[in-house]
Image (tube, rainbow, N blue to C red; front, side, top):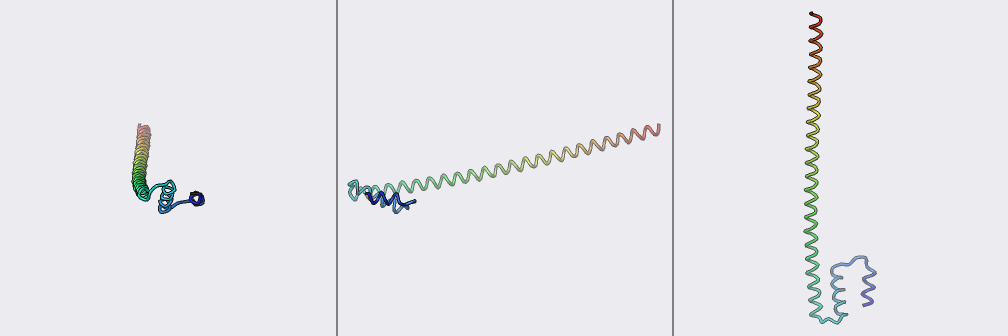
Length: 116
């Protein structure tokens, strides 16, 4: 057991193979029979597979949500940009029309004053 503890402390990461070996060694050290050791390792393997599947599903869902969020943000940005461009164009057109009307009115007033 001491060698097992030293081995665990000396390693930065652990593979699944070593994890199951350590699990079996702990069960044997605790006095379990070979059938119990096999059951413990099988149950641990099932739990590890379930955890991996759940993590993969969660990661996929998060990735899909992030993609959807990015698409929504891009659509909102595009819509806002289009609205801003339309508003600017409308304002420019209105200003040009007002300036043209004012110039025409001033010209008409000047012509009428000169004629009369």
